[in-house]
Amino acid sequence: MALPSTDRKLFLGARMKRMRRELGLTQTRMAEDLGVSPSYLNLLERNQRPVTAQVLLRLAEAYDLDLKTLSSDPESTNATGLSEVFSDQMFRDLSVARHEIAEVADSAPAVSEAIVRLYRAYLDQRRLTDLGAIGRPEEGAAAGSAVMPSDWVRDFIQTQKNYFAELEEAADEMVAQLAYEPLDFAAAARERLAKRHNVTVRIVPVDVLPESVRRYDHHRKRLFLSEVLTGSGRSFALAYQLAMLEYGPLLDAIADRSGPPDRPTRNLLKVSLANYLAAALLMPYAAFHEAAERTAYDIELIRSRFGVSFEQACHRLTTLSRPGARGVPFFMLRVDSAGNISKRFAGATFPFSRFGGTCPRWNIHSSFRTPGRIVTQIVETPDSQRYFTLSRSVSRIATSYAGDDSELAIGMGCELKFAERLVYSRGIDLREPVATAIGPACRICERPACKQRAAEPINRTLTVDDFTKSISPYPFASS
Image (cartoon, rainbow, N blue to C red; front, side, top):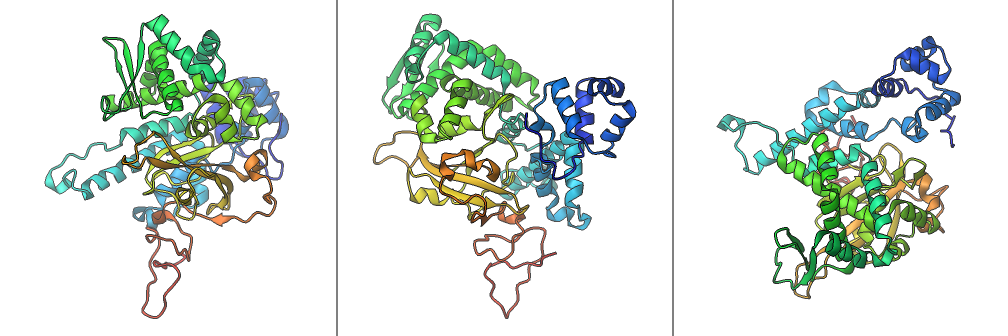
């Protein structure tokens, strides 16, 4: 079992205390489990003593923990979200320090997440007001919560690190029953739907389903799939229908206990969970993880082996968090040519803004100019963290020549320390790499002299004058 680096002392008091409370243990009981005195455990929980390697090992053995989950960098997703929140102009006079944000995120993650959600609701409310979709408070409009269902679902999935053990177990169970070869899933799924559920599958012309690609008629037991779906898309649709028919109660149970704020959000969450299960059916965890490791995460080779699309394989790579069989912790984005983000998943900390788009310096945008070709880039975020990224354009459906453009771009990435495990890093100097400095959305990015800046940062003062033209159209004071 690999231990974390000893280059710096580990103070994990808040996380140890939170874990002890979640397990329902007293300090005395946990001290016994760890082979230390209650007074020493008390010092550890109050961060008056660093956690030693021996204590970490005992924690892992006593409570079946993955050390990475306990000794991870405090610059967590919650800390990143809080940093964005407190960079807002309304908090400028508070001068909230970075270490304070990290401390709050570490010691009170649920409170941190609540603050981030509240801020998101505030932004959504303000955006709707600016667009004229709702009246301003002085006009008598109700304030109410404006959290969008997609945002709530995305945040919930991220709090689970995009991994659901129950769904993985369900997928393993069905895969064992189907006993199919990877490229024969569609035939096995059709047979299962017909024999167990009396469901007939039909491929229909685009004019029969002009505004959808899949429709299930539960009265007549017919599943209609549009001809515009690619082969991998049809397989996924079959997997989705099997997931809904055979594991509907499980999906309902997970969706209900997650505590969604309303029915639309709950329904969207259930669909997202069904999509997760469908992906697990097409790409069973053990076989997919082994293929990823053996091919050095060659996505084209992996997707060919399982008969899935590039996007489906990328999404599945972000879910490889099974204890004892973890993959490279990837993050993933899907954007359109206008920069709108429609997918955002991560198996670890996500380095990009939760409240805006992507940085134009990240080459995910340039991948539209090289259709179907993977482009790589090493990027560095403002906190000096470096990531190895790869991007490629994809097309989800088979459109006619005169049809609408359905091209999107997929961006993948991981911390630079994992890059040596990827086939895409071969031939690249990872010890002294050329890294492109990027930032979050322009409104909260504080990188100076960026010629691609589209807006001034909201927590800095513009320094425009009559005598100098800077590289950036929005020069600002450093503090």
